[in-house]
Amino acid sequence: MDYLREVFDKKRIKLLISAGITLTVGLILVLIGVKVSKSLVDQNFAKRWVKDDSYAQVTAFFSELSEFDEKSAKELEYKISNKLKEESFAPENEDSRIWVSCYSAIGKVEVFSKSRSTTVKAIGVGGDFFMFHPKDLINGSLFSGDTMMKDLVVINEDTAFELFGSNDVVGQAVEIGGVRHIVSGVIKREKGRLNDLAGNNEPTMYLSYEALSKNGKISYINSFEALLPNPLTGYAKDILQKQIKVDEKRFDVIENSHRFKWTKLLVNIKNFGTRSMNPKGLVYTYWENIARGIEDYLTPVTVLACLLFLYPCVILLYVIKRAWNKRRIHRADVKDFAQRRLEEYREKRKLAKRGDEYEEI
Image (cartoon, rainbow, N blue to C red; front, top):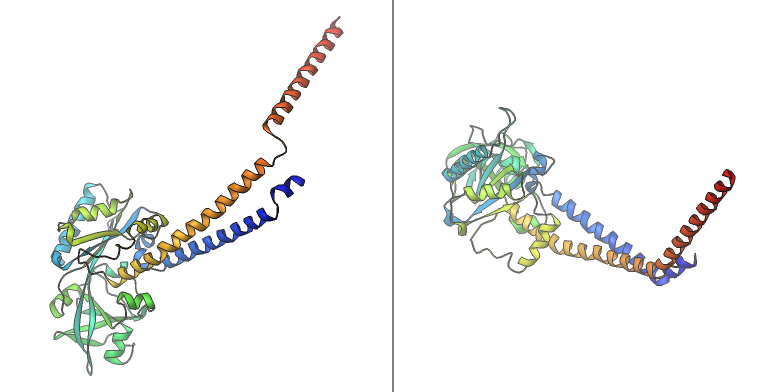
């Protein structure tokens, strides 16, 4: 008891309490970071596809000078498919797929309803866009990438109210560039400070890339996304990057799946001050801007959490060292004790042996 009082005096108890508090705060920060990163469904397609890390979501962003268009996207899909076949990746059955992709472009369209008209932000999409970017539907449905009906559009609630004064408008007709289109679904617009700053703060319409390129104002595809097998770290990113035949100064590839891991966030520290620079002239989508904003928030939080975890480790080592120094039994004492016990054992063996000899006589 006296030994414990010496080791855990008032000063040491206060230190242990402070270590417990910092450890708790660090765990809270970690849980907040995990919750925030999981809330970005656009960045977590791989986890929705498989539960393990055998797949990764990767994205290529292009500058306007890249002149990356729908033909380029189709060629890229073809090259990736061939590369995966060469690497012996194959679907389990005829109805399954080994990988999926989508692409998108940002533009503007002037839209007319029966009684109103407005100019809205338009996102022209191709491939399985809504698999990567599931939306919160108010009513209706999202169109798929393989649909033959290129006249379907999905609008957010802001666009619905500007054109019709209501969000119950599924099946209504709108005119874009003199061509009739049908509203397939109405979605909620994600709100909040980051969404507003990222560009998701205005009436928006989603339509096929083909329809946007014919009837709207658009220049190029600025985003190509893929979900690919990732048997080794960086494998999926490497496949996408090597199949793009564009000047490397005009595009960039990122891996979405692991961008919020603490090791990745700590790497951002070395790019602090230059990370926001964009010498390649890339135009990021609003969902990428949100993800980058979250990264900027979580990087200092991760650093702080690491420091908070380091403090209790140091305190614990200090208390262990103090307990060792205050111990009542030292190595020499243990050695002497062991030697005495060994000598006693040998003496007993000798006495027992002599007793056996006397019995024989």
